[in-house]
Image 1 (cartoon, rainbow, N blue to C red):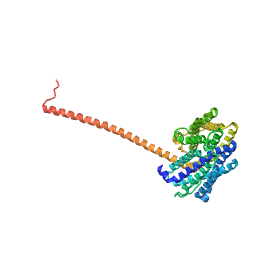
Image 2: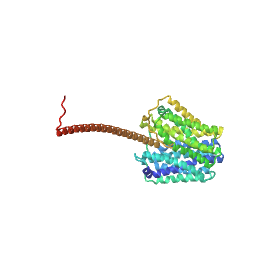
Image 3: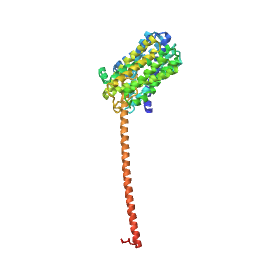
Image 4: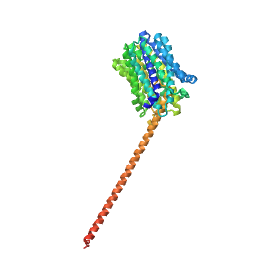
Length: 473
């Protein structure tokens, strides 16, 4: 990992700064919107607009890169992001914010695709998986750090809008001045949604519902906090807990996913999420408990996202995984657009607890559909499933494809190592058995030799003393 960081640090540092900027603006707008007196549903439209732009960016950026190249696309999108982050404070109007959120979602989508293709090209076959894993970790670290920075200024002023703009501008300096050349870019052949649904209905339906979960968690959490009357520090802690849980729970759940029916694991996790969110609606717990529940909500949502991708790939050839990932991410993006809108409507109807009610319903739908699919298709043998890979909802098809390939290669290498170890163990056992047999034979031969030697010694003694054996009477 040290070699990966040493080789790719400009890109990784740039991505972290970008995520700090993105993380600040996502939470800050929810807080500032409350200060400006925007309605809950108006803010839901603002938050949903980001995912509209993100979806269009994922479709149009590859063509932009082919026409003008990575460097120009990267610099142009970065400049737009920096400008929009400043304009938020200059134009405190929810309609203007909606337009700017579309622009900034489009730009961040393009930046992710460009950076991920750059990372992919700069890594070797041996380090590609570690490089993309470091990239995912840096994304999470950047967003968590952003929540801390929210406490350095007044959300009603300009400073908190200036900081992310500056950080985004600085993010492009190490990237554009790095020595690594811009890579060639090729898009993946698309798989039709019909083919994708036939391969994995649960993957498609689950990804659509998870899009709603993610966009609600990461888009409307700060809006909920403002309506709930939380302070800026409390909102930042709540949002940070979602990301921390998403980072920590990936590893143990990934370990379990390779050893059991993934549908059952999806069902259990989603059911737990539904129960936890419903408990919030019913008992309205204190803030400390809400932070723990936020970590659990993020700790369930991120792994379930990765599980759905892995489960879909269980039914695909390796050559189709990249195109399937692109289709799944598009479905997830469509679901993400609906998340803030539905959440905002519920919060308008029943108050802040509508945020948790929406999450409870979506998790329950995922659990119910996973349970129904378990009755329609037999479980796969664990040894025949694809490898689980830790994925981020913001990752482009490029990163998803590389991470999946690296995880699959690591799984194959682990299987080969286990087979070699088992063969060596069997050889050692056989060698031990042969050694025991040989030792027993040697001991028997030695005993026979000693008996013969004793008999020979007895005869020589009789001859030497002149004794004759007694005669029969």
